[in-house]
Length: 90
Image 1 (cartoon, rainbow, N blue to C red):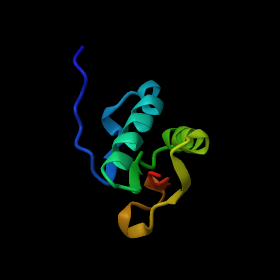
Image 2 (image 1 turned 45 degrees about the horizontal axis):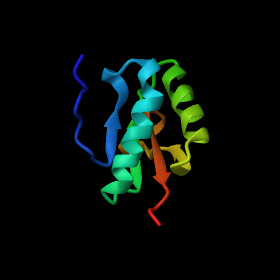
Image 3 (image 1 turned 90 degrees about the horizontal axis):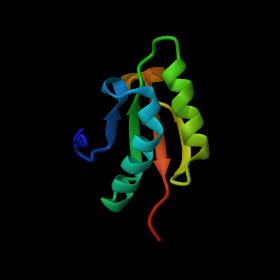
Image 4 (image 1 turned 180 degrees about the vertical axis):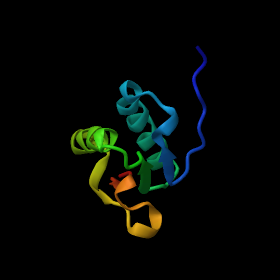
């Protein structure tokens, strides 16, 4: 299977990815964001039952790239997406 190329932007939509791939995906995505000077990322996980949201929160808590994270404001998806603040390169 070929790797999927996704553009490095200030948001990523997780709807097309398998839950078991999300941890590695976010880690690699954060590294690319930091390398490209992007330090605030919106992670779109959807509302649903909150399973993916909770999974993402667990990943963000453990990530060495994340300073903080919080629900997006209502106009950017509310609790259907999470904003992650990334560490700046030294």
